Length: 381
Image (cartoon, rainbow, N blue to C red; front, side):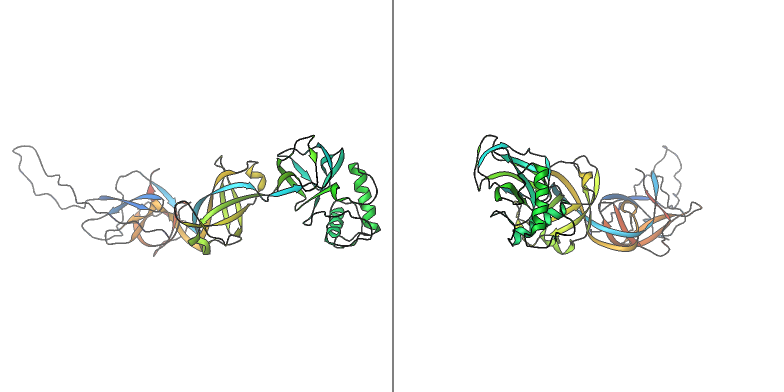
């Protein structure tokens, strides 16, 4: 919660005087209006105070300063913290070649490839992309069992090369696997033998990948175990380093607002909150928080782009709130807001401050007679 602004007080200026020789008249006692500058949260307010005391709920507190009106709102109010982050793609993968020969065609950087597509060629023969977590360490053929067979069955079903005969959760290479594999081989230009040599596919964790770097050049020798390219998923993510002391205030599922390099905003959701504390250059400690944009397309295609993220750290349901610059510092201590009734009469309502939303420039207030929909005085913009 933000610190409440401190009130200031000035002495009335002595303006006594007159023409030479004129009879001095006893000045009348009158109320002097003093303007008090107040800094609160993200805004600056001007407080109208009465240095001679009296009723703080005077019928008219107008002071002639340029003002505007704002509305008292009611609803969920959230305290936010703004942190810098990096917009990029999720995942970092390395594709390892298992075929021997010469690279005759390679993938292109920044291009997206899908499962089942030919991603490069060795000696003119296609190497396809398949989704999985187990590298191809052996040639697969009918009668085999294992985790590598299970991921092949799952890939064939996902690609639509099998009907009800092939179980995507099965780890057995049966006739249904062979038939489905032959269909795939026919489509990509492989020999239709119903077997998968370990050099004919690259296994990566996603069915859609974005190539970020190509290691060899066309014409280079291809050997088993060498890196062909690096890739990421096509999913977008934002990573921010949050002060470790705020870790308990950030939770998976929290909603955030992402400000992009072009200053457009888009919503996101906290996907994970790190548990490893890292020291930063200023001597503080931070944790990494990963955020998934709600609308990935709205983030464009920039990689490693600097962004700003507004994270909700605390919220209150059904709160009355006003702009921070509507706050008035009272000489006796505390704060108030100047309410303008429908008839135009102004009255000062003392309020108790609650949660501040620095991003929106609003503050939670409670006060006797204060209600949603009322109009309050703010400095003219």
